[in-house]
Structures are given as structure tokens and as C-alpha cells.
Length: 214
Image 1 (tube, rainbow, N blue to C red):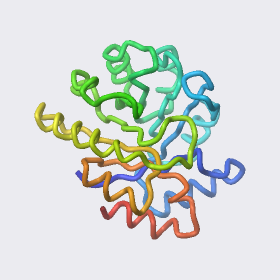
Image 2 (cartoon, rainbow, N blue to C red; image 1 turned 120 degrees about the vertical axis):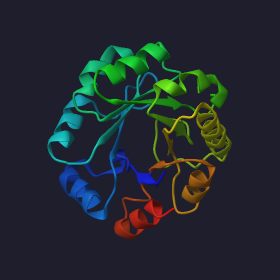
Image 3 (cartoon, rainbow, N blue to C red; image 1 turned 45 degrees about the vertical axis):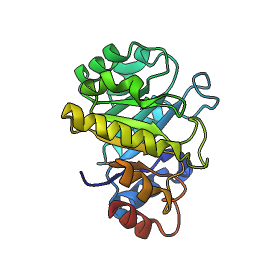
């Protein structure tokens, strides 16, 4: 699988969001990562459907919507209106299998996300219901954190289990991704990189090309 890049919109300047998205499109990114935080499941609040709908109207890029919210099954239909990939946390209090099935029924690709404290073996049974698995390499809720190297073993274990089950799904990694950590994540099995401050820089074009070349 080739490496795909999903820059985190949370890092953008919301008053210059159109310009930032146009720059990302021109640089050749593959999708936009949208972090939805509710202040309950994670200790931060970000944005909701109004912003996501607006972004959807102004970009050709797929939207990778990451729900960091409590009991996400309550809001699937609403977010599926704009999401291309819809992800939620294993730890968030929804029935995992039923939520994954419902996301697919609503026409989105289903992504299951795991926090750093969750062992990869806990989600092996759900892999056939996933189009993507997101491994958090920081504690979810805030940007700018340092990459947790334990995520590499988790990625390797998930990739090995996918191969064992004959599954060809994307493994996404989010948190502390930069020029040093990205190659390690890709080597461990990641195929989708979520990056924030590393991409939103004066060297955006060069950094995007570098990450996609891994």
C-alpha cells in the first residue's frame, strides 16, 4: 500500500481555512483529517457539523472524520452526511461491531480508533468490519504532543493480524508525526499519516512530498 497523507484541519488557521485547504490540495495531500472533540470523551472541544459541512462544500478532498466523542453511535447519521471516512473510539461507549456496521450502512468507510492504553489484541475481532484502523500515538485531545514509540509495536501487531486474516485495510497513525517519526510508523505498517504542525509550515510542499514518498 502506498502512503497517504491526511493533514489535521485542527492545525489550520480557521480564519484562513479556504486558503489553507487550497494549499493542501495544491501540495497533493490525499484527504483532510477532521478531529471532532466534545469535552467529555476528551478534555478539549473543537468543532462539529457546521464546520465539516462548510469544508465539504469547498474541497474535492475526502474527509476523514475522527469522532473523539462520548457514545458516538448517537451522531453517526449526522456526520455521515459529510464524511467519507467516519471513525470512532473503541473506548467511547458504543457497541463496536454495531457501530462499524452502521457506518458502512450509511455509506462511509468505517474506521476504529484506539487510544495508547488499548492493546491491539482487543480489537482483532473487529478488523473484518473495518476499512481503516487509527492508532493514536499521543493521548487524544490536544495537538502538539510528543510521539509515543509504543505505537510502533501496536501498528506492527495490527498489520500482522490483518495479514493473518487476509485483510487489506489501511492503518492510520495520529500524533507527533514529523520527519523523524513518520518513517518509523510506515516501517511498522502505517499507510495513512495524520500530521498537523509538521505540514502546516512554509515548507508544506516539500514536507508533503517527503511524507508521501515514504
